[in-house]
Amino acid sequence: MGVDGDNPEDTDNAEMLPDEAAVLPERGEALGDADDDQLLTTEDTAERLGIDLD
Image (cartoon, rainbow, N blue to C red):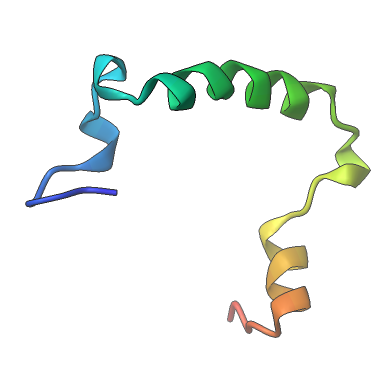
């Protein structure tokens, strides 16, 4: 999340917490290994939460 007008995309990897930096590669591998039917789309999630995207 951006603080004091900083853009979150501008975050340097060196500024990440150690546990945060360690878990990102694991999460990436898990997403790569997941079957497409295991992943939720934005539309699926919105429908489950009762949110109208239109």
